[in-house]
Amino acid sequence: MLRWRGLESTPGDLGRTVVTVGMYDGVHRGHQKLIGAAVARARAMRRPCLLLTFDPHPAEVVRPGSHPAILTSLDRKAELVAELGVDAMCVLPFTAEFMKLPPETFTHTVLVERLHAAQVVVGENFTYGHRAAGTVTSLTAEGRRFGFAVEGVPLAQDASEDGEVTISSTYVRACVAAGDLVPAARALGRPHRVDGVVVRGDRRGRDLGYPTANVETPPYTAIPADGVYAGHLVTRDPRSGASRERFPAAISVGTNPTFQGSRRTVEAYVLDFDGDLYGEHVGVEFAHRLRPMAAFADVAGLLAAMAKDVEDTRTVLGL
Image 1: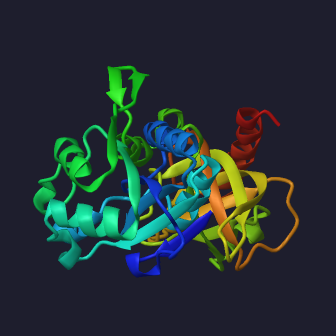
Image 2: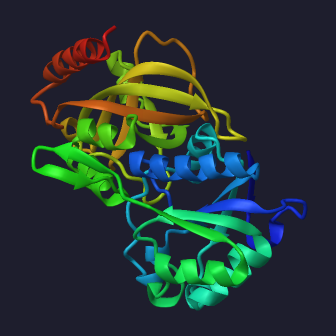
């Protein structure tokens, strides 16, 4: 998949495209439905499918200090959309200047002049331009003027204990923040994952017989609620971000209260693994929450709990 940042880096030989536009944070099942529609149109028209996304999240520019938790890094997003058949991904810097573009200027400058849209596929609630004044209706009218078609795809729904819910990044973030990883995985179509680099920690786990990979995540990463989880650690290519090997792991999120810790960390104990992960780019996948984080009276109590966590991880993962 081709990937570039900024309109000025758009390949000159791109030709007419089928464009889909959005943050696509999480690339959840609703996004997958939308991207699938765009890919299908592109294949039928024999044109490349181009995904246009933004960085940073528009909320941080529109309302500074309101940056939402991020479900997928740009590298992970690129990997996921490529798997869905997207041919190219353009990351557009979302700036204060860009935020002020009138809807018709966004359409003409971005979609027509730079990305050469023959068709635009967006969600039915899509908005664009200054103060989100543009809608699917206005985009359709602009498409007739500039020579591209527009399709608005209905939002995806999912069943929950409270009835039908709309699958959205906001919904997934709420599930992750509460530690409800099963409904989050159902909405995502896969386990929630955080990416980062393995760094040196206190090495306390190694001394206790449970060496952990201390994963340092980027700012704003959507980290689940404190607790212990069953899941996997995935090694990644440091250049492309592509996933490589996947290992079962018991994962701890929290401040290590038994040792009066104050810094919140994500640590993965990789089962049956003997190797050095320091400096590795990895993903940590959360399958199921085993228990809340707890402070133990002594090391013996902690070790007993850790042994059970590993046993429970094996059970949950079917090992």
